[in-house]
Image 1 (spheres, chains in turn blue, brown):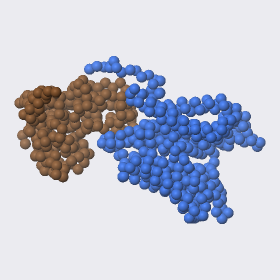
Image 2 (tube, chains in turn blue, green):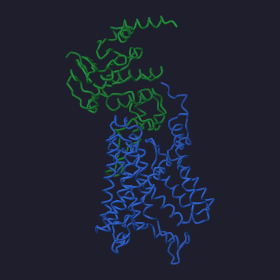
Image 3 (cartoon, chains in turn red, yellow):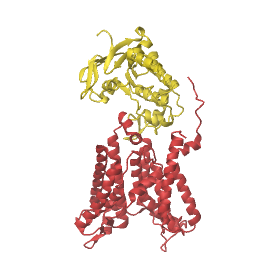
Image 4 (cartoon, one colour):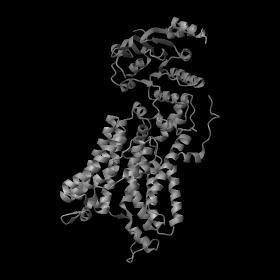
Length: 370
Length: 262
């Protein structure tokens, strides 16, 4: 029995790191960071308040990117994420403002509704065997149309911030459960202390200019950690990878592929609902056109994060770093003298580079092809 | 019954509409033997395998396991009785590691915190490397991606996995069809190892050169009918080949080929 094969090469630590799905997004993020350090290093982009600013943008996107990445690794797409955000926001605001529901009840209702819609998405994809692209494209239109039509029908408006003198912002602030979960900041005391010590900028009253860590960032980090853990360390994670890698093989070895995929559609829908709840808490309003194009941004973040469009390979942490790149570029560009319109050009370029890089890495490093 | 058969098909027929896929086929597999099922394309090998695996139910005749009649309604039931089938597609995911593939659908778990359980990657890695080692396949690293393995190694991984999860009868669907000479020999060695462990193997192939060295008994299929079962001791390699290809018919063909002039 041969104990070693002379044709097996030692691939080494560097190659191993190169073959990690996160590699592309980490190097991308470092590159973007360096560019902004040189072009906008002294503009305030890297002050506490500047960092919180772009990290918040990244966090909102990151929340849906985690869902999109898990779904993509599981072998499916969801193009209805953006429409789901708009729909969820309206479904939260209408009962709260017009039907007198407590905000937290309206929020729970929204989450249940979105989970149901996610189940429908998944069930249709599994039952019909149609590509998820088509099924969720249908929901992309249905949900956007419903948001506009229902809100016009029920309230006569498509942007909701108050009704009969009652402001949504006040309802949110007075709802203990909802505001504890979704609005405001954490670590405000720490930030104030840092301001007192002169580490970060302070207001006239001595409190910190950056109030604290917005809860959306905490949610984002939490979701990334949980998603990454589930994918890498649990049985369910193995099922997700198997279902996306080869659904037939997975089914033949006893993986409940249908259940896994449907639950991933539910997770994605819940991420959209969470996005909407945080957005309503932050903006104090809901609008039927919210979340426009967010599905594409989430998918791009997932792809930058190393997820293969064909499924079975990718990283939740990578997707979150992809979202971080988005946040940095979208906000950072305003700190430089570069025209804002270059943002989309950059995104498209980044997407293309990421896809080419992922395919190259998969073939060259992971599968050992040339 | 005097002889101890682990799996028996008695006079089994299977129809698909007007097509007679199997007609009165009898197949008796002894405990711990390698039983080769030989036949050319369209002989009904696939239908026979799927009947054994529980995918199809026989329209006529009986299916017995350990001498008891069975009526499988799904492959899961056959698997529960230790009848495992390794199909040609192997049910492996190329982008996943050896350990993840080995335990796909049957992941070992350990407790983490209270009710939370995680996949036991350490156990999975150790077991998969160990089990492959027993089969004569050296894997340096359980995190190696299956896509980087050769066809023969993948075949061995699929077989080792089936054995580890309690296969008593291993049905191998053309395991050497897509392999080169050396890799085919490795798979044949693996079949011998499985037999040494007391596992019965049903080896489906159309290559007599592969079947003859490892087989104890040979059942020949032709156009949905069995031409009978022959013990290795009672039949020579060329006779098997003759019968499989339809004997006289084949000789004529060969003569035609040799007489070709352009």
